[in-house]
Each structure stands twice: as structure tokens, then as C-alpha cells.
Length: 103
Image 1 (spheres, one colour):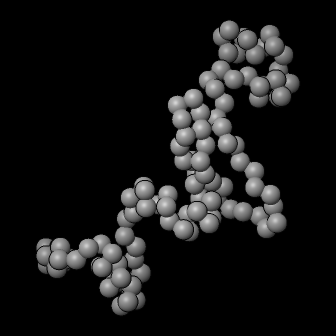
Image 2 (cartoon, rainbow, N blue to C red):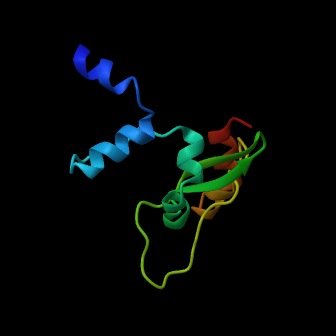
Image 3 (cartoon, rainbow, N blue to C red):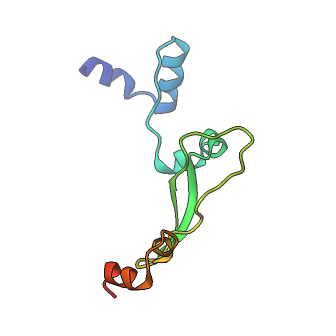
């Protein structure tokens, strides 16, 4: 392993990746989070989506698959802590929601 390390230290990760791929060695270098976010394939596949909450904007995993001819549906904001809208939509009464949430 020391011989491999001594050889590859002379190249950037991009150069090594390119050299290995040209010799039919299946490989991929590790990407930084910024590289992943800016990668054209990540953007095209919507692998990461921008969402926001009270703390600000951040990226979250997108749907692992897409249906043809479907409209995009995603949650653009994260509900605040204590948000009870979903519980009422599920049929819980106000009293039960207060009991669950400790209000």
C-alpha cells in the first residue's frame, strides 16, 4: 500500500480519477458537499432540494425516483416546532392535540 500512496501523492484526485477511468478501472473520487450540491447531475435529478425553516435555508434529500409526466411536489418549508396542522388534518380534536403537544 505504501507504494500506491507514494505514486498517487504526485497527482490531484481529478488526475488520478481520469487516469484510472481511462484504463477501465471503475472509480470515483470523493466529492466535497459543495461539489455535490453544484454537480449538474445532482441538479438535474433533483437529488437535493432547498428547504427552509426558522433557522434558514438548507438542502435536504430529494425523492429517490421521479415519475414521468408528474408535477414536481415538494415541501419548501419545514413546519415550526409544535405545529399541529397535520394532527388536525388527521382528525385529532383540538383537545387531543393540546394533550399530545403538552399545551
